[in-house]
Length: 269
Ligand SMILES: Nc1ncnc2c1ncn2[C@@H]1O[C@H](COP(=O)(O)OP(=O)(O)OP(=O)(O)O)[C@@H](O)[C@H]1O
Ligand SMILES: [Mg+2]
Image (tube, rainbow, N blue to C red; front, side, top):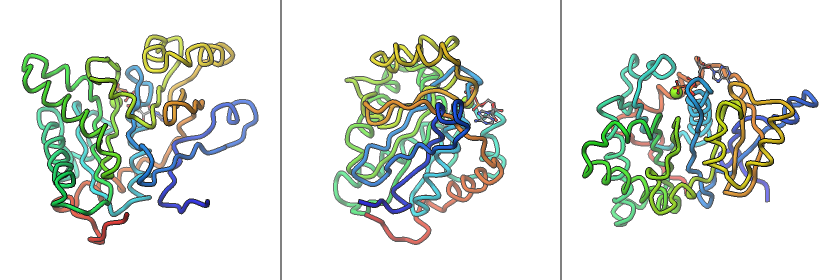
């Protein structure tokens, strides 16, 4: 069956085709309601995970402009600060990130209770999720509440079109209780294998040999790595350089919607 454009999202390009044949073959994922669209981008500092997160979210927004988008950034660095500078209403950084979670969780509960029957995407984007959790570690009650709510969003969100997209430098098991990490349909590890070995091994243990062999031929550079789709399909990926001004414009627009309400007011199934 042919998928419509608003059901498909190009994550990046096939790295093997790019490196060995100079061909740009898109890696396309299905973002229709039936699919698991939760995403994580993992890699060491400077590997390009926030860049990949931004470019993927911009494409998601383009595909679903009717969605509600909430951005939490533990550190509002140079790449992300445009959202603060442009006073985006739905941008929450540093000590305020948990407000984004509160808002999305509230919307999730309304859909669970059926007081909200709309099904347009409601998306929580969280840059440096694990660092953020570690920063509140002294407040055990708060940590548990964050972890529990994120797990709930991951486990039960798909059917209600709630999407979680996060970047993280580490991918600690404690932050994904009850194996909820497996609920991410799109898992990207970005950056050189030699530098990120422990990350690749932790996130995708069953594919370590394949990844190691590929990296031995030619190790991944910034913006290159591996993506695991729906827990089974492994692809080597190249995150193309994007027009960052355009990406910024798309995010500024989406994060500035009053009350996160859809532009067209209509809920797509
Ligand atoms: N695919 C790419 N094409 C062009 N530039 C890129 C690409 N990926 C990353 N960069 C650039 O590399 C730098 C580091 O990227 P980024 O900030 O995304 O890394 P990070 O992994 O999020 O690092 P940190 O953990 O420190 O936040 C940025 O200046 C970004 O613009
Ligand atoms: Mg970053």
